[in-house]
Amino acid sequence: IKTGFTDSAGRCLVSAAEKDGAVMVSVVLHDPDDWADSKTLLDWGFSQLQTKELVCHLSGTTIPATPAEDTEKAEQDSSLSPYTLRQRQQVSVSLAPGEQLTEVVSLLPSLPAGMPAGTTAGIVKWIDSNGTVRQWSAIETE
Image (cartoon, rainbow, N blue to C red; front, side, top):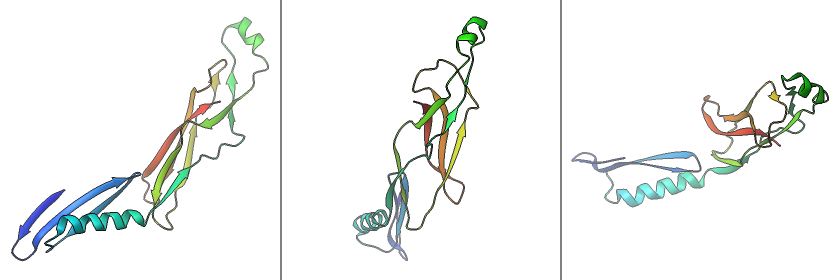
């Protein structure tokens, strides 16, 4: 991010790196080997994190299919099955020891009948204790 030098602080370096969605910042002061030491600090920081796969808890969750507006079609759709849902893609996040995320699911109230599999029906967000969205995934129909 920034290099620097003063007589009292010597060689200084502020650096940052990102891995699996986690950002680490390193600050070294009065360090003749600032680049190598900063890399060592960043590597150590990342080694303290745990990568966790995030899976939305959708088991048995459905949303209703609404009948078509066409009267003839609506009669054919009178026994509509609800849409079963799944998480669109696998996602992971790096967590500090003891760090917890809250899962927040937002779904559409319904979808029109006849939508193909893979239609977006909502979103799931994983939020940390500061209210920051750390990861997200679309929710789709099966």
